[in-house]
Length: 338
Image (cartoon, rainbow, N blue to C red; front, side, top):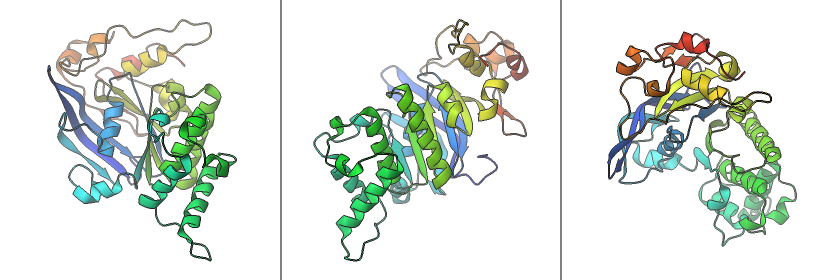
């Protein structure tokens, strides 16, 4: 899936740096990826791997003037998102929408939930179909209630009169999903959408995302630290390390057939009953002074001389499994969490 289908999102050779007092920090380096309609693609990796920066680059939400895109392209629905001007701007918040990690920070605490949903309908969503009496306000409210029902929020009419702080974490995340869906987008970027929720609600939100992709054909780019959550709902999983893509593989191959040493060591670090988790030694590569060759080589037990000198070129198998490693077969035979 993804590469074999027409891509809704296509990113090629994306390089992004941030200006800092200590010099440029290279946070994305030659990133290539695609997302197809109705596909859920997971971005996983340690903090600082570039997941959130990649999401912000797509959304045009990078800090100015600190961020600088040195090269590459981002195409969404055929539009150049970096150089497309008004055409690109018109897609943001409509064709592509965003679900944040902590929705409470994204709500306006001074306005009721219904008012904020109505604003989305008024300024970003397609016009709601008016009823027999031509009442646009009634049409918008009907569309909002239908969307709240679609994201499994009971007693949705009473909820419209509440303020964000009066909702539970799960309710706020569902309202945020409704907000993301009201413009009838083709793609949603979900940045750690279950991180602040308890386990039971996490499962419900993950199931809801899966249903949205399947029933509405919406593409979802899902960033997460939770490897289990990525395996649960994603069609493909992209493993990032220090601003580069280490591995792209189908969900079914993630635990059993990963081939990059970093992916294997991430999996081995997961806790398991009766087994001590194995941490990854060393620290992640600094974006201010990334190591030459493979960026993971200072922490990799299988690193050889070529790993220290040359960046590994990605190789792809017939099932779409891509790995950027000089010794992928050695990694496949190393221990991992299964």
